[in-house]
Image (cartoon, rainbow, N blue to C red; front, top):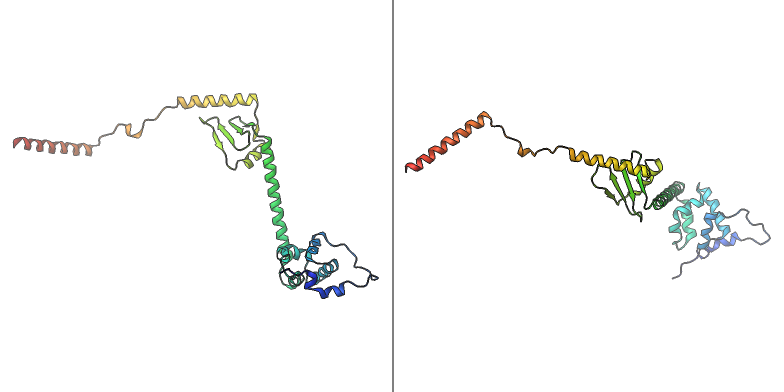
Length: 239
């Protein structure tokens, strides 16, 4: 069954909204955010009338339409539904403000994610060092991961998780700088010293290899056990 249009749902309204052509039209331009009401069968004069009705109920028609649009466009009688919303006690201004703020936050997050991705792609395949040349960062050619190598560690570590934000922040703050011949040489020098220090470090013997000290009580107990063992052996031989 075809849904009735707004004109069918509330046709009586238009009899009073369209005066003779000799009469002056209502001045003003329809707000752009209310233009979508036309797709539901609302005519311009009706929209202006609803704007006045919204003000009479301390509301803005734009706020009501913005918050209730998904339900409004599915309503069988959109005019009646919209007027019921105007008469309601709902705070559409607060809801519309929250909706706009949430949309703004999502937009900012999307823009920041795009910016971070752009910076990462621009540095794909690059090599960076920290300010002390103690850490070497290599970005994969496809920007899928970074390889971090501390000068005091024997092997590098791969970071394939959410490293992009921290990487970009480190570059923009100056904590990571592009590789140069001097920084490469300084890092290799620190790495060689670290390797020599690890090789020269004395190896501690395991705890179980340390000599045990025989206490006096333990010595006496051991002597008693030896005597008992001798007496048992002697008794066996006698039989």
